[in-house]
Image (tube, rainbow, N blue to C red; front, top):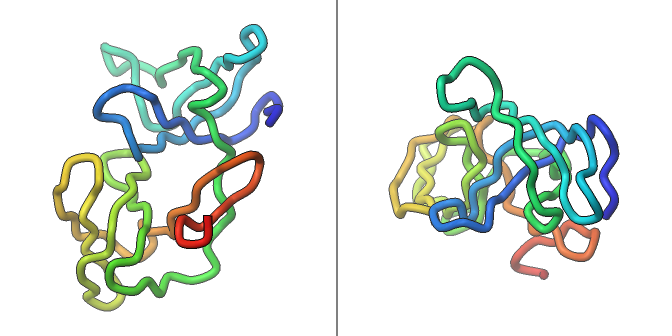
Length: 135
């Protein structure tokens, strides 16, 4: 997929510890044919004085997923929870209306998440959003 200047995207680095962790970023420019310069919305440079800007491979970028239509998730449903400034893939392990407890894939920790910080997990494959259950 070709991205455009100022597109809101999500970055999932292919490095250890970043699997299933999506950081929101703004696309600033193409760098060659398969890399893009992005500015993160919730990651900062080393001294914390400004948002981190870096070049990332195109296979680490996905568009922002469609906005949720509801917040009613079932036990064991695959979701993404906004924890520590990123969307992290996990599983609903308990519901305490209207909020959720989510066990994160990246570290196995359980987090209490307000309902508005939980969204359905979707995979971006070949230019299409797929639910892992139907993918």
